Amino acid sequence: MVQLRTEALGRQLKLWKKIIISLICVFILFPLLAISVASKLGPQFGIGFVAANLVPASSAALGYVLISAGNVELATALILIDIIVAIPALPVILGLYSRSISVPVPIGTILISLTEILILPLIAGQLT
Image 1: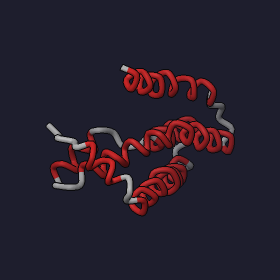
Image 2: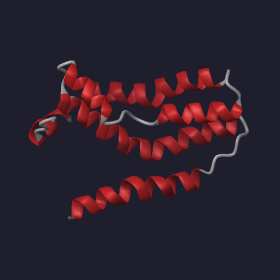
Image 3: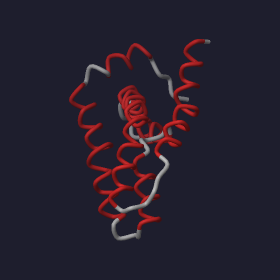
Image 4: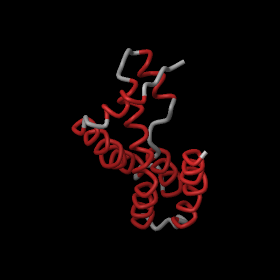
């Protein structure tokens, strides 16, 4: 079991250089790499490939950080920040890519789903 100390998590948020590097990788570099590969896959498969690569790291990544004796608090902070940024960024990036290849993607539906699945439970959890 991972023993997460919330005070240590707060200290990690002050490591802004590492956070900026992570955000650049997750929301600029990795999508560009995914788009370059997707262009070889065809429009329908390519849009799925890009969508799958836009989703930030999961909690499973924390297991690898723990096994490698990495900074679990920083990894947790990065995952939280990535998820928060992904909520608006994922539909925008996916929408821009889908328009460039003329594949319709229901961006409004994606935003509603993200709100129902991520935002509302997070808010409800904080209120209880």
